[in-house]
Amino acid sequence: MFKKNSLNKDRYGYYFVAPFFLSFFIFGLGPILYSFYLSFTSWSGFEEPVFVGLANYERLIHDEVFYQSILNTLIIWIFSIIPQLSIALILALVLHEKFIKGSHFFHAIFYFPNIITPVTLGVMFALLFDWQTGSINKILEYIGIVDEPVNWMNDPWMARAIVALAIMFQNFGFNMLVFLAGLQAISKDLYEAAEVDGASRLQIALNITIPLMRPVIIFTLITSVIGGLQIFDAPLMLGKGPDNSTLTMIMNLYETAFVRYDYGYGATIAYGAFVVIALATIITFMVPGVRNKKEV
Image (tube, rainbow, N blue to C red):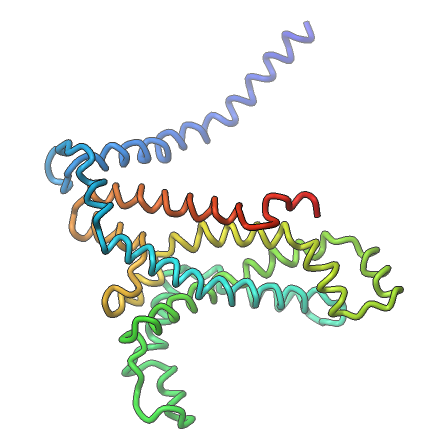
């Protein structure tokens, strides 16, 4: 009798999880499989897809724009991730100290950019760095650093740096909160023992805090790799820059599929981007210390 009742109750668990799986199969797995089929076709969206076999993948292998978009994405990601994680970790260490008053207020202030949509941030930075009416040029001219407006987006490296700055500005607050959560999980007994032994704040940070924060740092690094290689909104709003210098993988996918209406090749680019992101994630796991993070 007990087993029969428990089996009946177990069925209700499947009812609760069924909506998630149904929505995933319809809106997640279904489009993924359909786009995989489209990657073997030529389709403009107005007629029946024409099966072309591996022609799209052969085209992708020889597509210089695709390789340039990979390089641009990696450069922008590197430009953004180094200051992003550095600033987030420093702010987390400072705000974790007891002598900081009103730390929750600063938590909200620093996290606020993460709430703003990437499109809005892209437009904001485009207005700030506009070479004719942008506030940055106006301030620099007023101070006397430059004599005439600087066309920031006309230089490939400067354009990438501006896109990276927008991404860093949006995400450093989120990473700061993740680091703060990791800091709060460290036992206070370790700090008290270190203070009794006469360790300085710098020694405590280098020998206790940062080593014990390694799993959290690894988590933020991996999520930054996955998210950073999918950047789209900010560079789209800021423009491609000279010689497609800020054209990212997802921007290339968007323009191919939804601007030039080449949905078959656009689906192929999507799977090419997936392979690049997967390889980057695997390489991140191969970094010394990542796989053995449980030994900390």
